[in-house]
Image 1 (cartoon, rainbow, N blue to C red):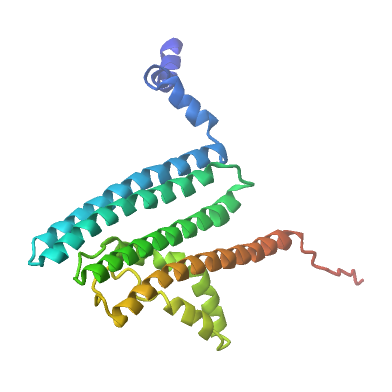
Image 2: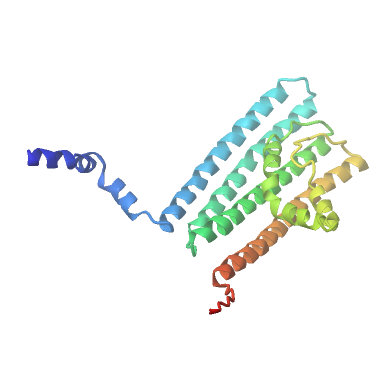
Length: 265
């Protein structure tokens, strides 16, 4: 009876040894907060790069089918064919940015708090900012074709997707702007944020071979520089905010509170 009882108690361990491989058990046993987390996060960004690439290409194909299914002139369709090739290529550097920045998280870090609230956030800000700059650059290329062919070409649909992520990319600057607004001094940063309002419209409508169209085209290339400038401003702001928060968190446990206790008899 005792032997049967012990077999019942050992049944989960026996199933684990028979069914689960030694590799799976070793992964669970050897998992730690540094090597394990870094490995899995790196893999997540690699998968995300592939999904973004496939999603962008599918979105572009749908946009092209809608455009070429309509009524457009010969010059517009020729320019749009070149734009399609150009925009299809843009998915490659975007996927490369996501993967390479995710691979940078595979290095060592001092602890989970720094990894989650510094390294991971900075990488995501950099990814969104650099992807936004690439999308803005290829949108400017698309406008260049529209200017050269003097026709309304197919729009870049990826700009609308990136525009939805711009809030995360610019949140350090928005945080500082909110704090300064309490002192009625947030006008400058508000103006900087306003410079990228309307980004991601995906429009490829421009008046060709005219001064008005030329200035619109020039502003499209300037917008790429503005997006990159805001990227480095946001990175610097978040690093500064994190350093202040980390210093406060490090100082609070060591803070000495003077207490005087007197025994009055």
